[in-house]
Every structure is written in C-alpha cells, then in structure tokens.
Amino acid sequence: MKPFRDRESDNQYQQTLGKIYNNGRKVRPIQGDESRMILGGQLRYNLKNGFPLITDRDISGSPFKQALGEHIGFLNGARTQADLEKFGCKWWKDWVSPKKCADFGLPPGDLGDGSYGAAWTAFPTKEGQPFDQIENVIKQIKWRPYLRTHRITPWIPQYAIQHDELRRKVVVAPCHGDIHIMVYPNDKEFDVHHIQRSGDFPVGVPFNMIQYAAFGLMLEKILDYRFNEIVYTFSDHHIYERQYSHVEELLKREPRRLPTVTLNVKRENIKDYRLEDFELTDYEPHPAMRIPTPL
Image (tube, rainbow, N blue to C red):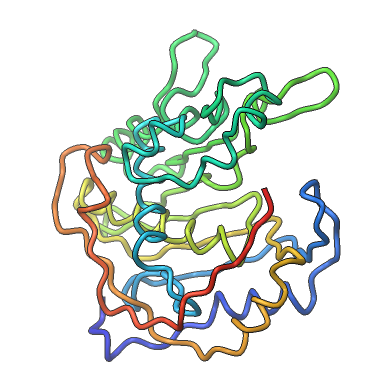
C-alpha cells in the first residue's frame, strides 16, 4: 500500500449511495418498508490506495471485528449462532430466533443447510460426499493458476428457493459470498471479484466489503501472490425507508482516505486465521452512526 499521506480520498461508496437514494426505483420488498433500489452497480478498489473500509461513518471496533469473525466462521463451515460466536460474531441472533428458524423447519440458532458456511465447506453433491469449495479452489489455484474457474458460490438452489411446494432450508437466502478469483501467474498477482445478489447498502454492504477484502489478504498469504484489486458487483442494492434520514446525513460528509489493514501472520491453512491476526491502522472516519435495518 502507498503511505497513508499519499493515498487519494475515495468516494465510490458515497457516490453509489447517492445514486440509489436519488435515482433508485421505489419498491416494497418482503420486509415491508418502502425501499429504493438499483439493479447493477460496481465498486473497484486498488489495494495500493488502502483497504476498502468506509470512512463515511466509523465502523471500527466491534463491527469491524464481528465482520471478520463472521467471515472466518463461514470459511470454517459455521452454520449456527453458537458456531459463529466461537469466531467472534454475535449479530445473527435476531435472524435465528426459535420462531424464525421454525418457519424453515430448522432448530433454534441454525442458519440452515443453504447458509454460507454449509455451502462453502459442505456443498451437496450427487455422489453424496459434501464438497469443500474453499479447500478445493485453493488447491486448484496452486495447481493451475491460469484457469478462469477459481470460483466459489453460496447459492444452493434447492435450499434457497421457496414456493408453495418447496420449503427453503436457510433462514436468509445468501445475499453475498459469490467469489471469482483471477490469478496472473506471470506477475504473481491476483484480483478478487465479489458478486452480491442483494445488498443493504447503508448497513450490510460495508461489512461485506471488509469481509471479501480480508479474504483477499488471507489468500495473499496462502498463495504468496500479491493481492492487487478487489471488485464488488451488486445486483439488487437498496436503501430502506427507515434509513433515508441517515443516508441524507452520510451524503453530506466529505470523502476521506482509506485506512490500512494488515495481516500480521502467515498460516498454512486459510481456515486457521482468526480476527486477532488483523490490525487496523490509519483509520480517520467520520463519527459513528447507528442505522436501522429490517429483519
């Protein structure tokens, strides 16, 4: 990364937030609130200019750590509230209440067969042997880095689709977690493209940005390649009505330079990383803001 003083301020996130707020289509999703949404959008971050942790509001401390803990938990196959708490993430409890889990035929605290950890590390197969995408994609990169098929998906259709004859087997159909890794062996570099089905842009998306940039940092250590760029592509990215006033305030705040996130240790297995391995510095955000989001 460039020295902090040499980095350019970044307003990509704020610009997209403004575009949704000012030009988004008004819809009424299942959560009940009116919302404004745009179909299709993209942010691109060269890691030389800093780590993509938004500066429009302060999300350091517990939010930053829980985002890392959730992602590391999913890399390790976590699929329950208890599993996630072992990795430092507590924020799923409202989504895995006894009532919500019962709606999908799941025991309390269980995210379900179609959740991120289950899909990434135990994807169902015709042969009946669960497939670990994380482990095998990393093996493939090391074996044939030039392939264009280094891809991971959380989407298991038979568990994520629901209608009157089919019961969904996941409390929240995966919103993020579709990852495409492009490797350039001649340059010893790689890029990460994260594709997001649905994004609560004021609340969820900043945490997802942390997670997949952190994934790139872990992969950098595992592969001994330089992590060059992360690209985030959003399908349905939206703002809920109860967030409008908060967004109006965020849009008034001037852009600032992105911080530094350092991964201080090299581990042999990506699943062995823990949130305490990451260090955040050079973070100079605007004041924190608590923004509501519907369940």
